[in-house]
Image (cartoon, rainbow, N blue to C red; front, side):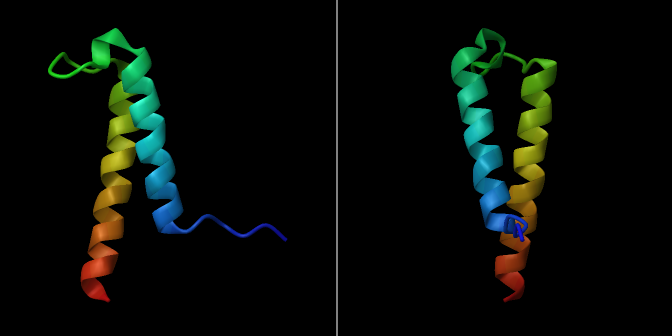
Length: 59
């Protein structure tokens, strides 16, 4: 049986995916506006980070 990734694991994977994208995409190099894929990756990372930090605050 496969276990679902923990929130922390998903947060770290989203962070890594965004960092890899930024290194490869000239449009996503700060402070240049992010491309569509970069915005989606960043949004996913931010949402997971917020959820993870909120969970830490509650515990």
